[in-house]
Length: 159
Image (cartoon, rainbow, N blue to C red; front, side, top):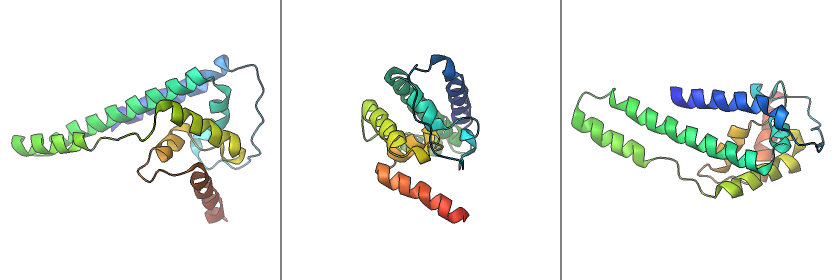
């Protein structure tokens, strides 16, 4: 799990440095004054996403998926240390690795969905990129509208 945290920290740092690689085109600013996620306090994650070109967005998705998988495997390996028997450890480790994340769509499809989400719902641009991606690949296969509705419910809960 430490590996996932480290990878996500590196990704966040890279995202913060992205302003030097932004396109010249101005994107409409989100009409958002409430940030529901700490990651978006300095700059809304959706605005960062929309400022990147397709190559950078695909690179982010690949990196995020790689980090997620490394974290999963590291967690499985760490779990071995929690068991006394080598046989039980080997069996459990194999089971853990078999439960790895199965992506439902291609990287290009995720890139398109994320871009559409941040474009269709400018008020939701505070949603961190990694969180949006994990919502899209979840076993429930949430639609863009379902993710938007979930975010709207968070605002209603705060009232």
